[in-house]
Amino acid sequence: MLIEAVEDKMPKLYARLSLGGELGRQIERLLCEGLQLLRKDDRETRDQLQATRDGIEKKQRKLLEAHYNDAISMEILREEQQALNTQLVAVKRDLELFEADDRDTEQILSQALDFAENCFQMYARAPEHLKRIFNQVFFEKVLVVQDDHEYKVEPAFKAPFDVIFSPLTASLATQVTRLRSTHFLSYNPRARGKHNSPSMTTGCAWMFSTMARLLRSKV
Image (cartoon, rainbow, N blue to C red; front, top):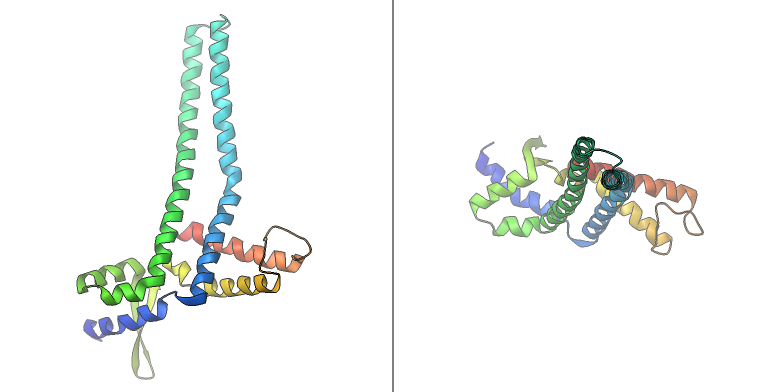
């Protein structure tokens, strides 16, 4: 099949992919909530790093006090502070990476969702050289398959679009929205109470944690 024939089919592929309408809003909400759940699950690690940092800084202050009170020599102070500084630099670096990863993940997800929502319009208006760039951003490759003597194109997505356009994502988004509408449009995946039955809580918690793992591995 000629490359020109494949390119002729790409606008229909982008039209099929565009995440407009209610389903698009449901998927966006699910992915954003999945990201928030991931952050909650990671909070313990961040808290541990912050506690370690605070503990090291406290030890440094105590060493200075001990030196000022003539309890330890300058040589011992220097050696101990050097060891603590090495630990502190490592912990601060881990914290900075943690926070930068949060910011980068949120930004990448937001931009990817915008692209997914408007991909058909942007592709249709783009000149040819930008269309090729679009294809490189969205797809690892585009497969050509024959169905009833007709050639079709099927995409293999790059991250994070493989999560955004996944049938699993659409299914989870639809299920969560249906559960919300059944239970007064409110849902807390961690709560149990009047409007959160154990089965619903377990099912939706699984859905959100699944999306969180997908986002962690793909974004």
